Image (cartoon, rainbow, N blue to C red; front, side, top):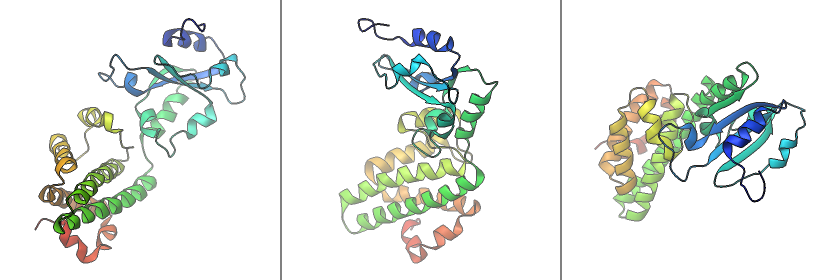
Length: 245
């Protein structure tokens, strides 16, 4: 562990595990997703310290190499990461390397993997409105001959749709890299994974309006059953443009 020899993952885990200030080690990213590692994969490791603890390991704060990226933070800070935020999915599927707190680290990760009911309902309503907005713009632009704008809006609608569907299942949306991995192992209830991914691929690539409308018909039925009819009804007559003709 000198300037001539980069800090290796296994060596750091051994060092951190011997430090009583460390209460948890959590590995995220491709190394935590079975089958997703490549020759370029590094180790993204959270080092969780007891609140108020001091340790020489803080000298590694900000350490980042092709082999090892470290985030060193307190237990209280770790609880807050991704709540809300971009890191939520990463930690939802993270792997515990060390938990000295009799399962507390595991419970913290579980809380990040499952949205609270009220949070999920609120977010689903917001994502539904964003999805409808992009879909409406895509269809309208296609109608008016603005092909590029139509395709861009269609691609944006897919992003909002995925956020919506995962929120309905009270889960953080996976990063695009892990979307197929996630759905292969944890399908969305009521959705055929292959058909959904095919539709997302086709819409993102072509902006095909008929596919968008067919998909919207499914989404409308699902979201109305979930209690989000008011969000859709607020679109009034514009819904006719989004529905299958």
